[in-house]
Image (cartoon, rainbow, N blue to C red; front, side, top):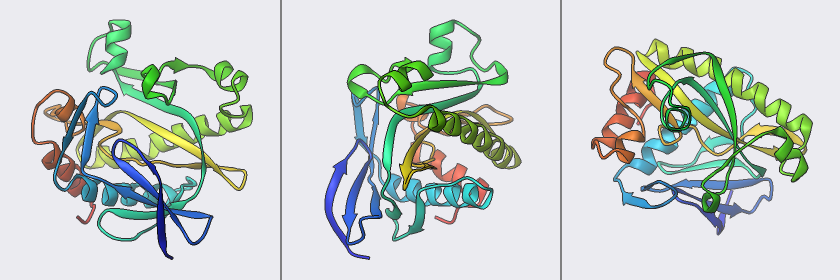
Length: 236
């Protein structure tokens, strides 16, 4: 399949057309950003690590009944994915209190959340990704009611699968975000799943093994990503 012109360039990934309208190339770059693009750096190997990490997770989820946009790894930094109509909504699950939840509600950082908390956010950097609910989504036409229900169900199924995967590797899946899109009328998991879009802590030490290392200036960002990858069996 031939890679063609660039269709979109985000903060850390680019999307390229192919000679088949049903598929696009997802290219993972070394760009790293936080705080809606206010902090930006290039981190060597990041594109490669996230591309292979995402491929591993997407394949694992597909094997366990989650429909995903992922088709195949093309090379170290690129993957072939379905060309979907993305819904501008982020589905967030929080298993442990951290980050914005602590700031918003004043709850204890590190508190186990039972049951887990599900939240919806509008994907819009200019508005700082505001929290929304199902009524906003339906009223403004960002997704249909049936699709919202499916997104929520899939997000919780992903939670069960990934909590187990990371727990077996000695890690806590603190929280994460997922994005979904439509392909030929069906809801699929899209975008990526990598340490860029979740919080992962070592189960014993609670050492941060995710993008918070970049946000908080802790250093060792890519080394932490690689550690997570090796623990769950990703071949880098």
